Amino acid sequence: MKSVKSVQRAISVLFAVTQSKKPIGLSGISRQIKLDKATVLRLLATLEESKLVQKDPITKTYTGGANLSQLSVSWRNDIRRVCGPYLRALSQVANETVCLNCPRDLERICIDSLSPQNQELTVVPHIGTANPIYAGASGKVLMAYQSQNEIERIINTTGLKPVTSVGISDSAGLQSHLELVRKRGFDYSINDVTVGACALAAPVFGADMQIVAALTVRGPEVRMSVSKMKKLAPSVISFANDISTALGFTGFHNKTG
Image (cartoon, rainbow, N blue to C red):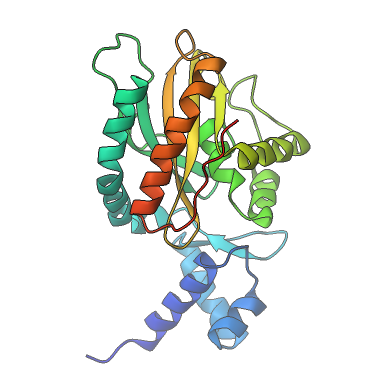
């Protein structure tokens, strides 16, 4: 069967945008896929209308759009199948809610959650719940391993509007905190997204060496003290490493602090 050239070209444009490690401009896309700018611009307009790409009105560069998540449903199902045994095992170790959060442009979305059976008071995010990617331990872990250009785009686009009164709302403070996350390989937060709740998270990487998820333990503040979260951090990192290996990642991030 003969392929449709315009569809092939649109797919090439979409790949160029989504596989770029930083926002990419019209000229860069044109050079990469060897198409003239006028053609690329028409294809970008179509993809933008479908919210598969989005254009920064200031820099005129392109990144993935909000509807890319609709194309990744099967991928999320795959990663849930891989992560399932590790989530169950970590839930036994932590005796708290364990969940998996994935980045979605300016947000991070919960794609799986498992709560303990013997705790009356729990913090359980619903699957599909979205929060700003800069908020909470999960979000900061996801942000910490993005490119510097992507981090700056998120900061500039969102303005870091805090979800609660304790959230980091200034760029310098967040950048410093993200450096700390990278140094120790995990993050924890208290009341950052939900008042009375704590979270501890570590990064999960895929075969392409990019971060794909945050493995997170959540619980009420009355049980999850800072000292408890720090003691639990090596286990969370270890399970996150195991998931990364199962997904094809060949590096390790086993620092604790």
